Each structure stands twice: as C-alpha cells, then as structure tokens.
Length: 264
Image (cartoon, rainbow, N blue to C red; front, side):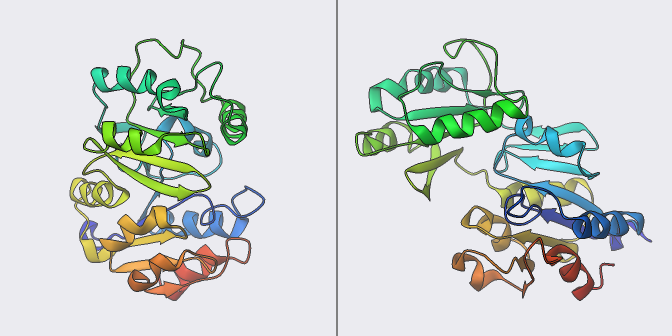
C-alpha cells in the first residue's frame, strides 16, 4: 500500500470503543487489528489526559493517542505535541476550588491532581476512585508545582460557576457536559485540531480520515472529518455531521462500520 493511500481512524473511548461493561469488545479489537495489518493507522482520540489513557496501551495495540481534548499527541509511544497550561494559571486554579465552592480536577500528561479534602461532591470522589484504580492519581501535594494541560470542574447548587467563567473564560473553553460537570480546555485546542495536526504529521490526506464517536465531546472531530461514524446510541448534536450510524459497541458497531466503508 502506498503511504498516501493509508487510512487513519480515530476512536472515542466511552460509548464508542468500549461499551456498558467498560471493556473493548473482541469484534472491535479484531477489526482494528485487521485494519492495521493492512497498513492503516488507528488512534484513540479522547478528552482524557494521557495519564488516564496508558491503561489502554495494554488492552489494545494502537498507533498512538490524541489526549486531553487536543492538548497532547503521542505517536508510537513518543510525544509529538503538548500544550501545557502556564504555571501562573495552574497556581490560580489550585486556589480556585474553595474560592468558588467547586471541586477542581487538574489533569496532566503524567498524572491527575485532586485536593486531599475536596469540596465534598460525591461525583468527584467516584471519579477519583476510578482514576486511582488505573494508577493515574498524583502522589504530589495538590498545592505543589506540576504541569497540567486541562482541568474539569464538578459543581452543585452552592458553586459559583459564573465566577469561574469570569476568571478563566478568556483562557479556556468551559464546556458543560451535564450533571454539574464542566470540561475546560485551553482555547483553540480540540479533538479536531489534534486530528488535523496528526494527519499533517503522518502525511495522510484528510479524505482518508475516519472518526468514531457518540457524544457531544466528539463534535469537534466530526466537524473536520467527512467520514464521521456515530454509534447507535449517540448525542443528536452529531447528526448534522454524521456520515454513517453504526451499531452499539457490544453489537459489533466498530467492525460493522469498518466493513461498511471497506476498510477491512
């Protein structure tokens, strides 16, 4: 296969690459393995930072990962791009949780940072346990010196989200994900910008890119890719950009889509 004929595939994780049982179906694993054997490339494209994606490296072989909503690119185990938040801004974020009565989760390539005694929101404790289970929680003091690329906020009725937007809204896109949860990414960086940068790095034509997703978090990569596959259960915000709707992960959705487009 000529290099310029290679296809690059980009997979969201939750609801796309993995189903309700939080495992990668055998059919998805087999389909990706076959596509890579044919010379095509497969990447995870996730809102999770790289420290939360390393667990997948032992579960499925990929060509790389686009992490942190476009703030980091790793190809063949080597970082080729990283957007770090300034140390001054990180310091302000560390001091913001009690100020605005919200739980901040500061995410970086190496680890995820939680305050030892957070503002007491149960959803944060649940996510913290999940992050700890995969070894991604930092052992450093929350008030220490470290590097991050994005952050998330969990709020409740007592939180001052408008105050947070006023202080950080010019530096970050603050996107509401529902249930009091906000994802905050440096302005100008998305799953879509990382996808385009990787295509350029790998010398792959844009028309040879295929994206797979299910949620509003995937909209940015759907907007820049003409071959956009939505899972059966997906956010309707993806509909205007969806080329093909496939089945659920458990019902061989990844494999069915790849066969539909004759990738395998």
